Every structure is written in structure tokens, then in C-alpha cells.
Image 1 (spheres, rainbow, N blue to C red):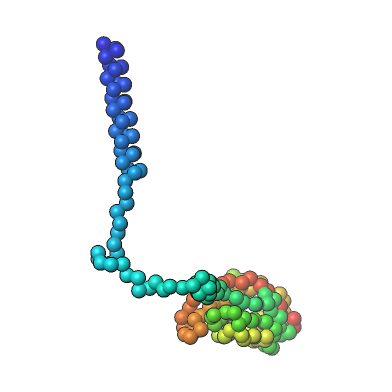
Image 2: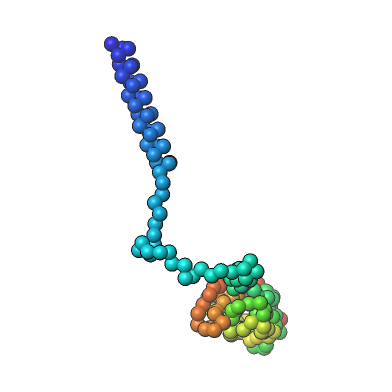
Length: 170
């Protein structure tokens, strides 16, 4: 009787292994159906353009250039006094495809203490005024650089945060 029970168990185990094997084979070797996105008609190739290797290279480079943001920003702003014009040094390089705006806050505070306004590509801001009356000292700052579409300055493209410091000497 014991042999009979063992034989049934082995047969059941072999049957289970066979079912799992067949199921795995079918799952792993099934073909993926072709999906037609335009309702079954001919493929839409209106967006395809024949390009030479050089044209393709130029096209891809243009796309890559537009996705890059360039900025030269002096992270050390210096003011002789809080109510005087100070040195800020912000450059929006010619290679940029966007307008930029730099707004600076003291670390941990929400109030903007410096705002560059919109800076077009090829423009340089050397000096600026503070919007707050700060005492003499060195302050940690966080500047938010916002990138805007060149043609429409209300279309925001992205932002970058830059950590720096601000010195008020008198």
C-alpha cells in the first residue's frame, strides 16, 4: 500500500512539472501581435523626412543645444552698503536659447532680496540693488534661476537653484 501511495505522489508531481513546463514554454515563446495605431490603414509616414547623415547630425545637435541651459553666475554678491548698487555678475551666454531671471533669497527665508529681471541671451548684468535693508555681514543665499521661452517670456521652461553668499561691507 505504501508503494502505491508513493507511485501516485510521483505521478502527480511529474504531471505538475509537465504542466508548468508546457505553460512556461507557451508563455515564453508566444508571438507578440502587431498593433496598428491608425485604425488598420497604411502607416502614417508624414513625419518621416529623408535626411543625409550630415542633416541628421545637425538636427540632433540643434535638439541637444536647445535642451541645455547655460549660465555664468558669480555666487558671491558684494555690496558696500545694503542701500547701494552692488556687484552681482550674471551672464546669459549667446549659446542659450532662453531668457533667464535670477531671484536671490537669504538661506531659509522666502523673501526675494535681489531680482535680476529678464536677461536675454548675450546680456550681462554686472550690478544690482537689494530689495532689503541688510546689516553689515556675510549671508548665505539661494538663487533661483528660472529659464523662459525666448519668444514668450511668460512660458517657463525650468529652474535651477544656486547656493552662494552675499556680503554687505558697511
